[in-house]
View 1 (cartoon, one colour):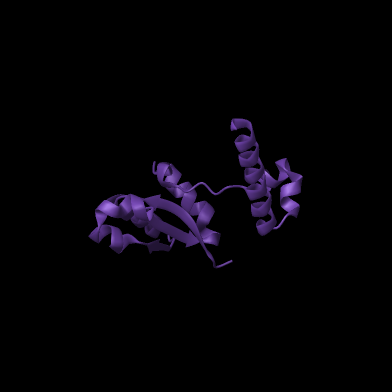
View 2 (cartoon, one colour):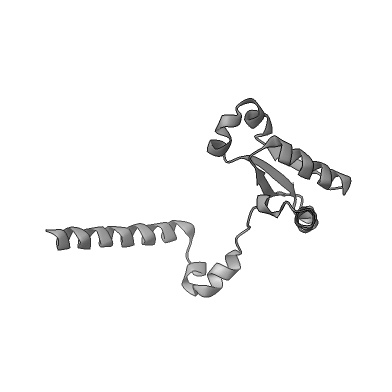
Length: 120
């Protein structure tokens, strides 16, 4: 339960500083990744994917609520609900990742072959 969860991504260190201080004032510790790199090389911020803020899993809901409450919700990372995806496609939940990739790639190969046959 002590694992870190990605909470938000920032492009500017100044925005990060505000949110980090909000969380710290509410007793939530955060782990920051790529902050120094982006401060030194700000022009590659988009290439690196921004500055990542992580919080402990137990603090995630409270940290998210604090960020939304203070108007910084645009920085939040959307956590996809995997169960929601699996419930729409029951077959997907029973397959392993490698099999899913093989099925997708084989489908793409079949489509490419049909395209080549039709364009000749």
